[in-house]
Image 1: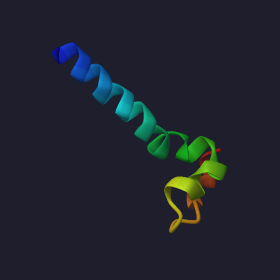
Image 2: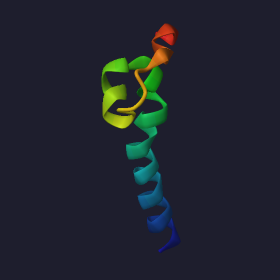
Image 3: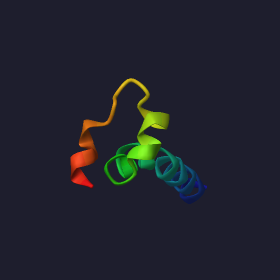
Length: 45
């Protein structure tokens, strides 16, 4: 049962992960997660 819960949490982190990970690699999706920030991290492309 605990493995199932951990797996669900892991999937949740995978869905939230792109907000922090692809933030640098995909500036186009940055506006979806951070509408207030105009993505100054584009340099790390």
